[in-house]
Amino acid sequence: MAIQLEPWKDVQQQEFPDEVKAAVFQNIQDEIAGSLPHVLEQLPKQPTVQGMDSPHQMGDHVCYDMLTRGPHYLMTAHFTSIAPNAPVRGVHRHIGAPTLFCMGGKGWEWNDGVTYEFETFDLMIVPPYNIHQHGGDKEIGCEIYVPETGRIDHLLGLMWREQHKLSEKPTFPEGTDPIYDDEGKLKGYRIKKGVLGIEQDIEVILGPEPSRDATFTARRAAGQYTGAVTNTYDRYVKLMHDEADYCREVDHVAKEREQPWEMTRMGRLKWMVHPNTKTAANHLWIYFTEIDPGSRTGKHRHLAEEQILVLEGEGYDVHDGERWDWKQGDLIVVPSGTAHQHFNTGGSRALLLHSVPSIYTFMDMGGVEQLEDAPEYDG
Image 1: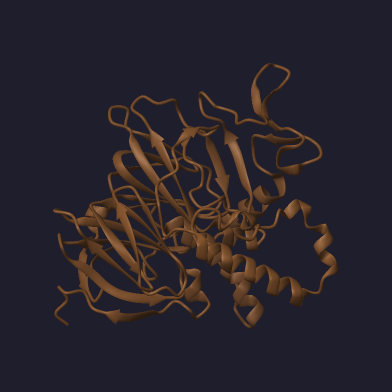
Image 2: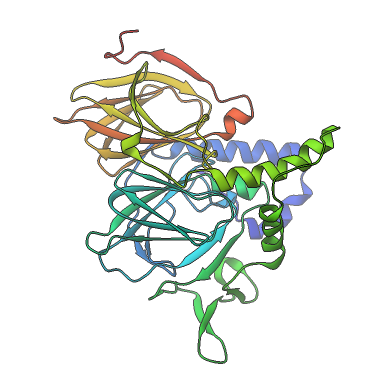
Protein backbone atom coordinates (compact mmCIF):
# COMPACT_ATOMS: atom_id res chain seq x y z
CA MET A 1 0.00 0.00 0.00
CA ALA A 2 1.27 3.49 -0.80
CA ILE A 3 2.40 5.73 2.04
CA GLN A 4 0.54 8.94 2.84
CA LEU A 5 2.33 12.28 2.93
CA GLU A 6 3.86 13.62 6.10
CA PRO A 7 2.91 17.29 5.67
CA TRP A 8 5.90 18.65 7.62
CA LYS A 9 8.37 16.78 5.33
CA ASP A 10 7.02 17.52 1.84
CA VAL A 11 9.12 20.56 0.90
CA GLN A 12 11.04 18.65 -1.77
CA GLN A 13 7.79 17.91 -3.60
CA GLN A 14 7.26 21.55 -4.54
CA GLU A 15 9.62 21.18 -7.53
CA PHE A 16 7.08 19.09 -9.45
CA PRO A 17 4.24 20.67 -11.47
CA ASP A 18 0.71 20.57 -10.09
CA GLU A 19 -0.51 18.12 -12.74
CA VAL A 20 2.08 15.55 -11.67
CA LYS A 21 1.39 16.02 -7.96
CA ALA A 22 -2.38 15.78 -8.48
CA ALA A 23 -2.12 12.54 -10.48
CA VAL A 24 0.31 10.91 -8.04
CA PHE A 25 -1.57 11.92 -4.89
CA GLN A 26 -4.95 10.93 -6.34
CA ASN A 27 -3.57 7.50 -7.20
CA ILE A 28 -2.09 7.12 -3.71
CA GLN A 29 -5.33 8.13 -2.02
CA ASP A 30 -7.48 5.86 -4.19
CA GLU A 31 -5.20 2.95 -3.35
CA ILE A 32 -5.35 3.69 0.38
CA ALA A 33 -9.14 4.25 0.43
CA GLY A 34 -9.75 1.01 -1.45
CA SER A 35 -7.75 -0.97 1.09
CA LEU A 36 -9.61 0.26 4.18
CA PRO A 37 -12.55 -1.54 5.89
CA HIS A 38 -16.14 -0.22 5.78
CA VAL A 39 -17.04 -1.36 9.32
CA LEU A 40 -14.95 -0.31 12.32
CA GLU A 41 -14.96 -1.21 15.99
CA GLN A 42 -14.73 1.78 18.30
CA LEU A 43 -11.29 2.85 19.45
CA PRO A 44 -11.27 2.69 23.28
CA LYS A 45 -11.66 5.80 25.41
CA GLN A 46 -8.75 7.17 27.43
CA PRO A 47 -8.14 10.02 29.91
CA THR A 48 -7.46 13.42 28.28
CA VAL A 49 -7.28 17.07 29.34
CA GLN A 50 -11.05 17.18 28.71
CA GLY A 51 -12.11 13.93 30.43
CA MET A 52 -12.66 10.36 29.15
CA ASP A 53 -12.68 10.46 25.34
CA SER A 54 -11.81 8.19 22.45
CA PRO A 55 -9.31 9.21 19.78
CA HIS A 56 -10.95 10.37 16.58
CA GLN A 57 -12.19 7.21 14.92
CA MET A 58 -11.01 8.01 11.39
CA GLY A 59 -8.27 10.52 12.07
CA ASP A 60 -8.44 13.99 13.56
CA HIS A 61 -10.20 16.97 11.96
CA VAL A 62 -7.11 17.97 10.03
CA CYS A 63 -7.05 17.05 6.33
CA TYR A 64 -3.65 15.30 6.37
CA ASP A 65 -4.94 12.82 8.98
CA MET A 66 -7.68 11.38 6.76
CA LEU A 67 -7.80 7.83 5.35
CA THR A 68 -6.30 6.36 8.51
CA ARG A 69 -8.90 3.70 9.49
CA GLY A 70 -11.85 4.06 7.12
CA PRO A 71 -12.33 5.31 3.54
CA HIS A 72 -13.66 8.78 4.45
CA TYR A 73 -12.10 12.01 3.32
CA LEU A 74 -14.46 14.30 5.23
CA MET A 75 -16.04 12.56 8.21
CA THR A 76 -14.70 11.29 11.51
CA ALA A 77 -16.13 10.87 15.03
CA HIS A 78 -15.25 10.44 18.66
CA PHE A 79 -16.92 9.06 21.79
CA THR A 80 -17.11 10.49 25.31
CA SER A 81 -17.87 8.63 28.52
CA ILE A 82 -19.04 10.48 31.64
CA ALA A 83 -19.32 8.09 34.57
CA PRO A 84 -21.58 8.74 37.59
CA ASN A 85 -19.92 11.33 39.85
CA ALA A 86 -17.10 11.75 37.31
CA PRO A 87 -14.73 14.75 37.59
CA VAL A 88 -16.09 17.85 35.86
CA ARG A 89 -15.01 17.93 32.21
CA GLY A 90 -13.02 20.69 30.59
CA VAL A 91 -14.42 23.70 28.76
CA HIS A 92 -13.48 24.61 25.19
CA ARG A 93 -14.62 26.47 22.10
CA HIS A 94 -14.19 26.02 18.35
CA ILE A 95 -15.68 27.67 15.29
CA GLY A 96 -17.32 24.57 13.81
CA ALA A 97 -20.79 23.83 15.21
CA PRO A 98 -20.59 20.39 16.91
CA THR A 99 -23.44 17.94 17.36
CA LEU A 100 -23.35 15.55 20.33
CA PHE A 101 -25.63 12.52 20.42
CA CYS A 102 -26.52 10.91 23.76
CA MET A 103 -26.17 7.14 23.32
CA GLY A 104 -27.27 6.38 26.89
CA GLY A 105 -27.96 8.00 30.25
CA LYS A 106 -28.70 11.70 30.54
CA GLY A 107 -26.94 14.93 31.37
CA TRP A 108 -26.52 18.61 30.65
CA GLU A 109 -24.89 20.82 28.02
CA TRP A 110 -23.62 24.32 28.87
CA ASN A 111 -23.39 26.85 25.99
CA ASP A 112 -22.16 30.40 26.65
CA GLY A 113 -23.64 30.43 30.15
CA VAL A 114 -26.96 28.68 29.40
CA THR A 115 -27.57 25.08 30.51
CA TYR A 116 -29.65 22.61 28.47
CA GLU A 117 -30.72 19.14 29.62
CA PHE A 118 -30.69 16.03 27.43
CA GLU A 119 -31.69 12.37 27.68
CA THR A 120 -30.94 9.14 25.80
CA PHE A 121 -31.10 9.58 22.00
CA ASP A 122 -31.35 13.37 22.23
CA LEU A 123 -29.03 15.48 20.07
CA MET A 124 -27.17 18.47 21.46
CA ILE A 125 -26.48 21.22 18.92
CA VAL A 126 -23.84 23.85 19.69
CA PRO A 127 -23.86 26.98 17.48
CA PRO A 128 -20.53 28.18 16.03
CA TYR A 129 -17.93 29.57 18.46
CA ASN A 130 -19.86 28.87 21.66
CA ILE A 131 -17.92 28.10 24.83
CA HIS A 132 -19.33 24.71 25.76
CA GLN A 133 -19.10 21.99 28.36
CA HIS A 134 -21.14 18.87 29.06
CA GLY A 135 -21.69 16.62 32.02
CA GLY A 136 -23.61 13.51 32.95
CA ASP A 137 -26.29 12.84 35.52
CA LYS A 138 -24.60 12.20 38.88
CA GLU A 139 -26.44 8.93 39.38
CA ILE A 140 -26.22 7.31 35.92
CA GLY A 141 -23.80 9.38 33.84
CA CYS A 142 -24.00 9.32 30.04
CA GLU A 143 -22.32 8.14 26.85
CA ILE A 144 -21.90 10.60 23.97
CA TYR A 145 -21.16 10.12 20.28
CA VAL A 146 -19.91 13.07 18.20
CA PRO A 147 -20.07 12.72 14.38
CA GLU A 148 -17.79 15.33 12.85
CA THR A 149 -17.08 17.13 9.57
CA GLY A 150 -14.25 19.27 10.93
CA ARG A 151 -12.07 18.83 7.85
CA ILE A 152 -14.37 21.34 6.14
CA ASP A 153 -13.28 23.87 8.78
CA HIS A 154 -9.65 23.02 8.07
CA LEU A 155 -10.10 23.62 4.33
CA LEU A 156 -11.86 26.93 5.07
CA GLY A 157 -9.04 28.11 7.36
CA LEU A 158 -11.32 27.90 10.43
CA MET A 159 -9.73 24.95 12.23
CA TRP A 160 -9.13 26.71 15.56
CA ARG A 161 -9.83 25.24 18.98
CA GLU A 162 -9.52 27.09 22.27
CA GLN A 163 -9.21 25.35 25.61
CA HIS A 164 -10.78 27.52 28.30
CA LYS A 165 -10.60 25.14 31.23
CA LEU A 166 -9.08 21.69 31.77
CA SER A 167 -10.96 18.91 33.48
CA GLU A 168 -10.81 18.65 37.26
CA LYS A 169 -8.31 15.81 36.91
CA PRO A 170 -6.61 16.30 33.52
CA THR A 171 -4.35 13.65 32.01
CA PHE A 172 -1.60 15.12 29.84
CA PRO A 173 -0.57 12.95 26.88
CA GLU A 174 2.95 11.74 26.25
CA GLY A 175 5.12 14.53 24.86
CA THR A 176 3.40 17.29 26.84
CA ASP A 177 3.88 18.96 30.22
CA PRO A 178 1.51 21.15 32.29
CA ILE A 179 2.29 24.87 32.61
CA TYR A 180 1.65 26.78 35.85
CA ASP A 181 1.58 30.52 36.50
CA ASP A 182 3.57 32.29 39.22
CA GLU A 183 0.87 31.46 41.77
CA GLY A 184 0.95 27.75 40.97
CA LYS A 185 -2.31 27.80 39.01
CA LEU A 186 -2.55 25.53 35.95
CA LYS A 187 -2.73 27.74 32.85
CA GLY A 188 -2.12 25.34 29.97
CA TYR A 189 0.30 22.77 28.67
CA ARG A 190 3.48 22.56 26.61
CA ILE A 191 3.95 20.34 23.53
CA LYS A 192 7.60 19.34 23.51
CA LYS A 193 10.07 19.71 20.68
CA GLY A 194 10.12 16.63 18.46
CA VAL A 195 6.40 15.80 18.73
CA LEU A 196 5.05 15.50 15.15
CA GLY A 197 8.34 16.92 13.89
CA ILE A 198 8.12 20.37 15.57
CA GLU A 199 11.52 22.00 16.12
CA GLN A 200 10.64 24.01 19.22
CA ASP A 201 8.16 23.75 22.10
CA ILE A 202 4.60 25.00 21.58
CA GLU A 203 2.63 26.41 24.51
CA VAL A 204 -1.14 25.92 24.56
CA ILE A 205 -2.46 28.57 26.96
CA LEU A 206 -6.04 28.54 28.27
CA GLY A 207 -8.41 31.24 27.08
CA PRO A 208 -9.61 32.91 23.87
CA GLU A 209 -7.52 34.08 20.94
CA PRO A 210 -8.07 37.88 20.91
CA SER A 211 -8.73 38.51 17.20
CA ARG A 212 -11.17 35.59 16.79
CA ASP A 213 -12.93 36.52 20.00
CA ALA A 214 -13.26 40.12 18.83
CA THR A 215 -14.65 39.03 15.45
CA PHE A 216 -17.40 36.85 16.92
CA THR A 217 -18.16 39.31 19.72
CA ALA A 218 -18.80 42.00 17.10
CA ARG A 219 -21.04 39.68 15.07
CA ARG A 220 -23.17 38.84 18.09
CA ALA A 221 -23.41 42.45 19.24
CA ALA A 222 -24.43 43.76 15.81
CA GLY A 223 -28.17 43.49 16.48
CA GLN A 224 -30.95 43.36 13.93
CA TYR A 225 -30.12 44.90 10.57
CA THR A 226 -32.00 48.14 9.95
CA GLY A 227 -30.28 49.60 6.90
CA ALA A 228 -31.44 49.62 3.32
CA VAL A 229 -30.48 46.83 0.89
CA THR A 230 -29.84 48.69 -2.34
CA ASN A 231 -27.15 46.52 -3.95
CA THR A 232 -25.57 43.10 -3.81
CA TYR A 233 -22.91 44.13 -1.29
CA ASP A 234 -25.62 45.32 1.13
CA ARG A 235 -27.06 41.80 1.08
CA TYR A 236 -23.83 40.45 2.55
CA VAL A 237 -23.63 43.17 5.18
CA LYS A 238 -27.17 42.23 6.21
CA LEU A 239 -26.26 38.53 6.13
CA MET A 240 -23.86 38.90 9.06
CA HIS A 241 -26.68 40.32 11.19
CA ASP A 242 -29.09 37.62 10.02
CA GLU A 243 -26.60 34.84 10.84
CA ALA A 244 -26.08 36.15 14.36
CA ASP A 245 -29.85 36.48 14.90
CA TYR A 246 -30.40 32.95 13.60
CA CYS A 247 -27.85 31.39 15.98
CA ARG A 248 -29.48 33.19 18.92
CA GLU A 249 -32.90 31.75 18.05
CA VAL A 250 -32.16 28.11 17.21
CA ASP A 251 -32.75 25.16 19.53
CA HIS A 252 -29.69 23.67 21.25
CA VAL A 253 -31.25 20.25 21.87
CA ALA A 254 -33.28 18.13 19.44
CA LYS A 255 -35.51 15.80 21.50
CA GLU A 256 -35.79 12.30 20.05
CA ARG A 257 -39.26 11.71 21.54
CA GLU A 258 -40.62 14.77 19.71
CA GLN A 259 -39.61 13.63 16.22
CA PRO A 260 -41.97 11.47 14.10
CA TRP A 261 -41.19 8.20 12.35
CA GLU A 262 -41.73 8.20 8.58
CA MET A 263 -42.17 5.22 6.25
CA THR A 264 -40.05 5.93 3.18
CA ARG A 265 -38.58 4.12 0.21
CA MET A 266 -35.49 3.43 2.35
CA GLY A 267 -37.61 2.09 5.25
CA ARG A 268 -38.64 3.51 8.62
CA LEU A 269 -36.75 6.75 9.35
CA LYS A 270 -36.78 9.39 12.07
CA TRP A 271 -35.01 12.66 11.32
CA MET A 272 -33.25 14.65 14.05
CA VAL A 273 -31.85 17.42 11.84
CA HIS A 274 -32.25 17.93 8.09
CA PRO A 275 -32.21 20.77 5.54
CA ASN A 276 -35.53 22.23 6.71
CA THR A 277 -34.75 22.09 10.44
CA LYS A 278 -34.07 25.45 12.08
CA THR A 279 -30.86 24.45 13.79
CA ALA A 280 -27.20 25.39 13.96
CA ALA A 281 -26.35 21.81 12.91
CA ASN A 282 -26.65 22.66 9.22
CA HIS A 283 -23.32 20.92 8.53
CA LEU A 284 -24.94 17.50 9.03
CA TRP A 285 -28.18 15.63 8.42
CA ILE A 286 -28.77 13.12 11.22
CA TYR A 287 -31.50 10.46 11.28
CA PHE A 288 -32.40 7.00 12.62
CA THR A 289 -33.27 3.88 10.64
CA GLU A 290 -35.22 1.07 12.30
CA ILE A 291 -35.10 -2.37 10.60
CA ASP A 292 -37.36 -5.26 11.64
CA PRO A 293 -35.82 -8.70 12.36
CA GLY A 294 -34.97 -10.47 9.11
CA SER A 295 -35.75 -7.40 7.01
CA ARG A 296 -33.71 -4.85 5.11
CA THR A 297 -33.74 -1.23 4.05
CA GLY A 298 -34.02 0.00 0.52
CA LYS A 299 -30.88 0.47 -1.54
CA HIS A 300 -29.62 3.85 -2.68
CA ARG A 301 -26.57 5.81 -3.74
CA HIS A 302 -25.42 9.38 -3.20
CA LEU A 303 -22.26 11.42 -3.63
CA ALA A 304 -22.15 12.40 0.04
CA GLU A 305 -20.11 10.28 2.43
CA GLU A 306 -22.13 8.65 5.20
CA GLN A 307 -21.19 7.52 8.70
CA ILE A 308 -23.53 5.18 10.61
CA LEU A 309 -23.44 4.16 14.28
CA VAL A 310 -25.08 0.82 15.11
CA LEU A 311 -27.13 1.56 18.24
CA GLU A 312 -28.93 -1.79 18.46
CA GLY A 313 -28.87 -5.16 16.72
CA GLU A 314 -26.63 -6.98 14.28
CA GLY A 315 -26.56 -7.50 10.55
CA TYR A 316 -24.59 -6.57 7.49
CA ASP A 317 -24.29 -4.00 4.72
CA VAL A 318 -23.75 -4.54 1.02
CA HIS A 319 -21.60 -1.81 -0.54
CA ASP A 320 -21.26 -2.04 -4.33
CA GLY A 321 -21.79 -5.79 -4.06
CA GLU A 322 -19.38 -6.39 -1.14
CA ARG A 323 -20.69 -7.61 2.23
CA TRP A 324 -19.64 -5.96 5.51
CA ASP A 325 -20.90 -7.49 8.80
CA TRP A 326 -21.74 -5.23 11.74
CA LYS A 327 -22.89 -5.40 15.37
CA GLN A 328 -23.94 -3.01 18.12
CA GLY A 329 -21.38 -0.26 18.71
CA ASP A 330 -19.73 -0.51 15.28
CA LEU A 331 -19.31 2.36 12.85
CA ILE A 332 -20.37 1.73 9.25
CA VAL A 333 -18.38 3.85 6.78
CA VAL A 334 -20.03 4.45 3.39
CA PRO A 335 -17.69 6.05 0.83
CA SER A 336 -18.88 8.67 -1.66
CA GLY A 337 -20.86 7.31 -4.60
CA THR A 338 -21.33 3.82 -3.14
CA ALA A 339 -24.57 1.87 -3.65
CA HIS A 340 -25.46 0.55 -0.19
CA GLN A 341 -28.17 -1.36 1.70
CA HIS A 342 -28.58 -2.51 5.33
CA PHE A 343 -29.77 -5.99 6.44
CA ASN A 344 -30.92 -7.09 9.93
CA THR A 345 -29.91 -10.67 10.78
CA GLY A 346 -30.77 -10.53 14.50
CA GLY A 347 -33.87 -11.54 16.44
CA SER A 348 -34.81 -7.98 17.42
CA ARG A 349 -34.87 -4.60 15.71
CA ALA A 350 -31.71 -3.01 14.34
CA LEU A 351 -31.39 0.70 15.07
CA LEU A 352 -28.91 2.78 13.09
CA LEU A 353 -27.94 6.45 13.46
CA HIS A 354 -26.90 8.07 10.17
CA SER A 355 -24.79 11.21 9.70
CA VAL A 356 -24.46 12.79 6.25
CA PRO A 357 -22.55 16.03 5.50
CA SER A 358 -24.82 18.69 4.03
CA ILE A 359 -22.05 20.54 2.17
CA TYR A 360 -22.67 18.29 -0.85
CA THR A 361 -26.13 19.85 -1.22
CA PHE A 362 -24.66 23.36 -1.15
CA MET A 363 -22.53 22.23 -4.12
CA ASP A 364 -25.58 20.87 -6.03
CA MET A 365 -24.52 17.26 -5.37
CA GLY A 366 -26.80 16.33 -2.48
CA GLY A 367 -29.49 14.28 -4.19
CA VAL A 368 -30.21 10.58 -3.66
CA GLU A 369 -30.56 7.91 -6.35
CA GLN A 370 -33.05 5.22 -5.21
CA LEU A 371 -32.11 1.77 -6.53
CA GLU A 372 -34.48 -0.53 -4.58
CA ASP A 373 -37.36 0.12 -2.17
CA ALA A 374 -37.62 -1.32 1.34
CA PRO A 375 -39.98 -4.34 1.46
CA GLU A 376 -42.35 -2.59 3.91
CA TYR A 377 -42.81 0.43 1.65
CA ASP A 378 -46.15 0.26 -0.18
CA GLY A 379 -45.75 3.29 -2.41
